[in-house]
Length: 130
Image (tube, rainbow, N blue to C red; front, side, top):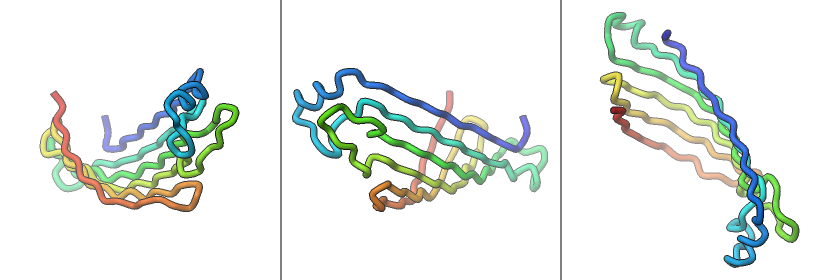
């Protein structure tokens, strides 16, 4: 494998009986279940560590990710989609891998919702793969 990392995912779900779930649980507005949800993301990263130490097993991977998620793509009859559930994220970050099985990740997430709201945030994560 080379220094370039590309990944993506697309998912769609259909929920039969969403109207009954909403009615039986008094779910309305943003809390109502959609009858169809969808989302996808694309991410690109590049390990820059080989530029500095070609034989190192340490990784330093700046990345960018674009995500689109709509939990109310379709609503059951009698329910209205809430535009706050139609979200777009642009994420910039860096992953540091001191070991191939350990990652420390810092990123900035720019969130935009179809209703012109959204909360941007800094995030930190650590992972261990075994």
